[in-house]
Each structure stands twice: as C-alpha cells, then as structure tokens.
Length: 236
Image (cartoon, rainbow, N blue to C red; front, top):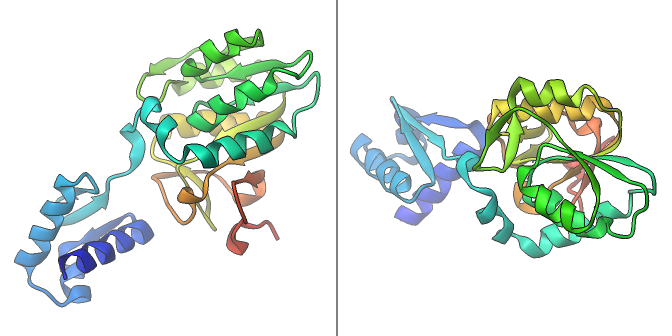
C-alpha cells in the first residue's frame, strides 16, 4: 500500500510541481500523520523535498555531468548519432552543455571546416581530441553540470551567428522544454534565438516531466529522440 501511495504522490508532483499535505490527505483518504511519514520517506530516498505545508519534486538540478553520462547512455548515443546527420561541412555549431551533446562531439570528426561555440566546460577535452575549432563562452562556471552560465555567457554568445544549435532539456511537455536552473535557461534561450536551426536532444525519460523554468516552446525547434515522438510533442 505504501508503494502505491508513493507512486501517486510522485505522479501528482510530476504533474503539478508542488502539492500540499491537505490535498494529499483528501486524494489518498489517509491521515495527516500518514502523509507526513510518506513524505519523510520519499525525502530520504531523494525523490522529493519537504517545504512548508507540503512537498516539491526533487528535480535533477544538482545531478552532476559525470552521473548523467551513465544514465540512459544507449538512448543518448542513438540521439547523438541522429543529430550528427543534420550537420553540414562549414557549419557554425552551438553545443549546449550536457551529456548528449558531449557524445555528439565524436560524430563531428569527419565534418570539415566546422566551428563549435559552447558553454560546455566538460566538452573541451573531447573537442580538443578531434581538433575542432572551439569557442568557449565566458561566464560563471557551474561545475555540477560542467557549464558556463549567467549574463557573462549570454553576452559572449551574442557575438556569434549560429547555423545550427543542439540544446538539452530536463523535461518536455506540451508546454515546451524546461530546466531546473534559471541561469542555464538564460543561455539556452539566447542560443535558440541566435541559431538558424535548433534541435532539442531529449531521451524518452524526459517526456512528460516539468522542471522549474520553461525556456522554449515546441515550435522553437525540432525534437530528436531515440524512438517514436509522442503525438502531443509533435509540432502541428
């Protein structure tokens, strides 16, 4: 019974971002003490965060780049390979910080006369390995996700015209693409506005998930994933 309640609580949080103890009591028809025990258990498991009067979903904002590389790795590999097929010789490419865009780098080896602009600190070693001309955006270093962020990165990006941009997201719904971090949202939005073509690289685990900040609509680019795109995420 506890497991079923946990599943319902997490489903509600995925849909609504936050929820009150009173609302959970009514939906699950259990006591306040039971709900508080459930929330305490889920918090210990790292699934949620307790807030005054309720809970919020524990978003993956602090998940580091090393951990991300090992999650859904086969799906990310497939997405990266698909993404590489859209790149032409001579393109100026924007690579968002993230694990899937880092995998994409090895598929750039045979592309000629390309340039890469990126806020991905963790991308530099791979880009150097393949001898790709690279421009790293300035700004605040966010080491957990291996990115440069804030206004410094945004200002740096405004100096470049981008042919094609590859952007990651923590969640995608009918409302658009989202991330837990307002600082990363700023740079993603700027990259989208400066690119002629935009591709969002999202494995299917991101479908239906909402993070704190929506930084793009579905119409702002093309979704690339490892399988079939759900109809609610297809541009009409």
